[in-house]
Image 1 (cartoon, helix red, strand yellow):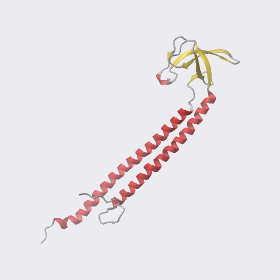
Image 2 (tube, rainbow, N blue to C red):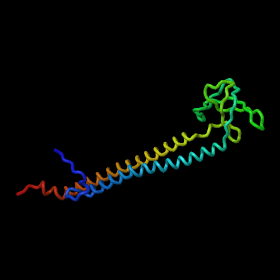
Image 3 (cartoon, rainbow, N blue to C red):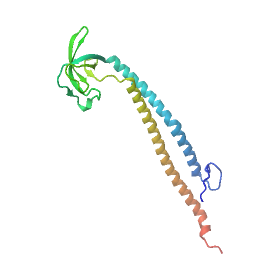
Image 4 (cartoon, one colour):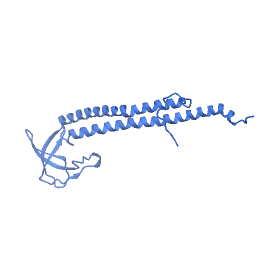
Length: 194
């Protein structure tokens, strides 16, 4: 029958080794790091990423403008996979009227399945190049959550990896302590008594 005594590493007893005390403190530190520090790191990283992404999105909104245009090209061309936007994977020639500048024509990103003569909303930067629309609030929040979870997960992984290394070192020290104790105690047990 096996009995388990909780907290034995914290109590004074003749079987407790120095490595047991170190391991008990290590477990306590690891628990605090996992349940307090890792979530805090994730929250701080997520908030920082949200502020940064929101500022970038606001800057993009000021640099980019949306135009309501009509597709004039019959066959849209597929944008290369490197610069592809999942919402607007094709490029087509579009025409729109800009106040004070008259009718303009340019190549722009359009949604899949767009046909000639259909109206589309396209985005241009200050140089007149077709660009992806600026990220909306949902994309900013998703980015912040992803960064926060990655930071918390990375912190937890480092803590657990450190704990595994610490346990390995503690095991080696414990075995060395037992070996020294046995070197002192063993001869008394193995010698014949007269």
